[in-house]
Length: 237
Ligand code: MN
Image (cartoon, rainbow, N blue to C red; front, side, top):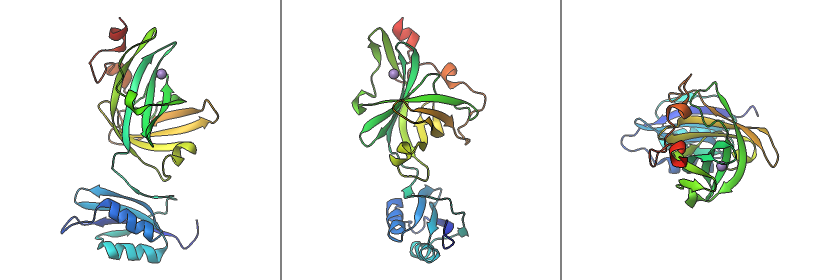
């Protein structure tokens, strides 16, 4: 990291009125700064890193309140955090073998991973996730018989893209951080590629946050569809 880089953590008071997060991000980018901004309880919270003079200028332009020295974290974008990036869905799928398909909306398609044991809210549990073909967005809500097997919509909602690297580059580089807002799955998760190639292997891991539930087994506790309340066994029955 060059020695002439610094970082700040700053709040922008909501009164009289904080600028919209998009506008803050645009100003920061125009100054060549990296980091993120999100809405906070009152106003905005931001992390910015880069040239010290540009940081001073951003803080002054925004009328930032508390400005603290931050740690340079190696951000590669200036992101708006806490906003939906699109839909996610987890479908439980009975095919040759039973598995769960995690799908994330990225640039108009559902990027997909087959997770044999399903997701976990326990940060100590790493679940194998095999990258599979993209899926059409309009098939997210499909539930029913499929060939000899079937599919239920096990969870769905919106998700946020996180991390220091912009998406979809984060996926191409094999490390993606995301926040799920589902009915069962909530909070931060990481997808880490462990074996690249055409049938890439990844690990899906819950991050340690307020939504983590150490020792839990959400797949066993909540087997039902979020659309119909049916389990996959009931559907196949
Ligand atoms: Mn599948």
